[in-house]
Image 1 (cartoon, rainbow, N blue to C red):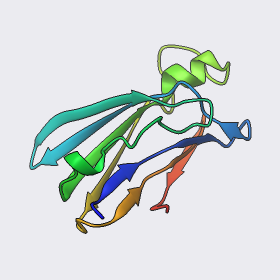
Image 2 (image 1 turned 180 degrees about the horizontal axis):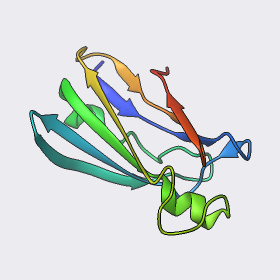
Image 3 (image 1 turned 60 degrees about the vertical axis):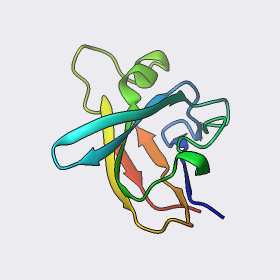
Length: 118
């Protein structure tokens, strides 16, 4: 088995999956960020495929950026030019070349959390 990365977003304020959130994945090396994938969450708040599939998996430091502001505006949970949460970056490391890494986002207009899921 080769490692891979998945993610999903749950809207904790509304108690449902967050559909339509754009997510970008970057490989981080020092001060350099290289975008390697971009996707959008489906009706289940998940991506249709792993955001980093096994054939592209490498260990290292990564950053997921969730474009939450667009979603919060579209669902009527936030308005205005400046939002408390807009782009939500999560930087994390993947050191096991055989592991499934799952990095979800729990989101509300004024708070967020993450964890290493399964």
